[in-house]
Image (tube, rainbow, N blue to C red):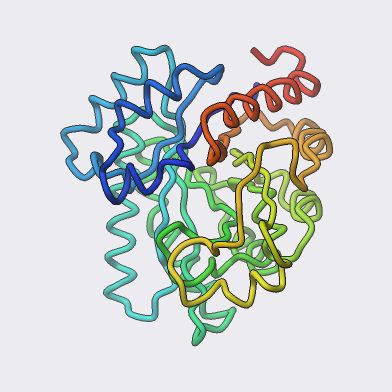
Length: 297
């Protein structure tokens, strides 16, 4: 049976960079929502000290919720082997963090789409690095989830495996019980592709999902693509919107996930315009999930 979680998309700067928001504040806000879990982010400032990890798990569980997923952004496509080794070491620490938090899923990415990198080189580098992390994941009972990503909030270049063909090639290279896909339909639009086409190709590998809706404040997807490299984070013309009011067809998405027996977490990336918006997105997804999984609580 699927479960709902929320992610603090609106508060990433405050929680990860300037420290103007404490995780205790986010926990209070998120646990007031009608969801079962809180997706965590490895880059929260307060997570730098390992002594805090078990305390945050306790705080969330005292509210009757859990931390099922850890969102991380390893950069496995750097040409320098020592840099990649450091990224693997960080990912191994994040796997441990997931375990201490009581989670089951830890995100991996391919890395940044650096201009000098060929497709074959990038796929091979990302494959090797992810495989190097799988023994630790298996040991601790954690599933590594590869997301069809657009661009980390703090990256200069977009995701190497942003395009469907590259993403599917990478997914097909890794056959392991502790590896699956975190499907994000909105990100597929940013690649200029059809999110349903991607879903139909990888639906049997999907174990978790990010739910959001996207729209462009101005211009076109082509305008976005022309400015997506060379600046840190998301382009200014891009915005997360309220779920159910954007481009995604959630009926088609959930119909396919139901068909393949999906029973994982759906984590909501929304609320950039306030907690009221996030509440409406929660209500929308709860209603949709109930249609396809009538026993959904």
